[in-house]
Image 1 (cartoon, helix red, strand yellow):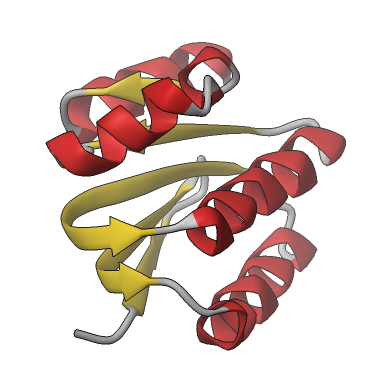
Image 2 (cartoon, one colour):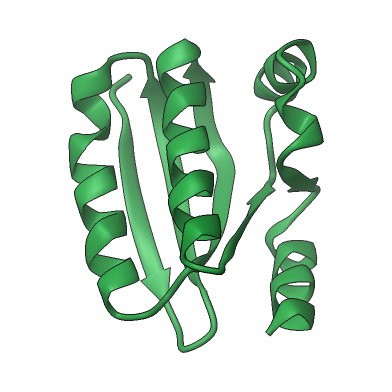
Length: 117
């Protein structure tokens, strides 16, 4: 399964929905370009929704760190929602769970981002 994503913007934040598998760097180019376009519109808070996401390796982890770094440099934040167990385990092993806010669902992520507004 290949990697795809969709975005849903509102005035407060953008939801990025991951689908498939993210294992090669070239799979993320469009995502990172889209992120730059969104941030150019002064949106720097993101929910990464993973309910339909299957797998990622170190490339995928690097993409997540890249998104978080860009958001925080712009004064924003990233909340990751609906993380599958295999990816949650990967984030625990790599200790990325200590730098990302990870919640069970998109509604919890919304509450966190709206509190920061």
